[in-house]
Image (cartoon, rainbow, N blue to C red; front, side, top):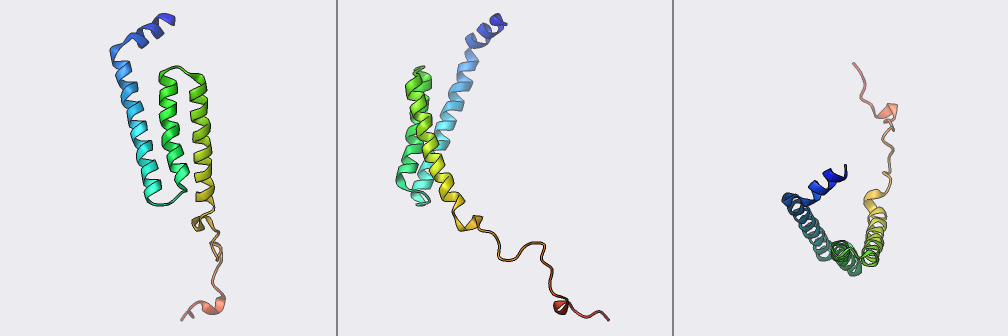
Length: 113
């Protein structure tokens, strides 16, 4: 099993897959941050924190630096936690006025002939 792991890690295509995936994740997260900031959907610090946390995570994981990685994930947790609170408190999550199971009154139904 150790030989398989060594061959897998030494394969030239593996690094390319991880590099493309990391860059795609970074690009998507930066686009999400820019969209949240431009739409004024969240406070500015949350959009900046999401972008900064992703950059810190990539730097920390690339350098194998545990404290930077932990700080990046903690910042990401704080930012996404605040975004979740904002989304959950939006009017779209409010319960409807009329329950779905409510039926119209008998007088409101058309008469059968």
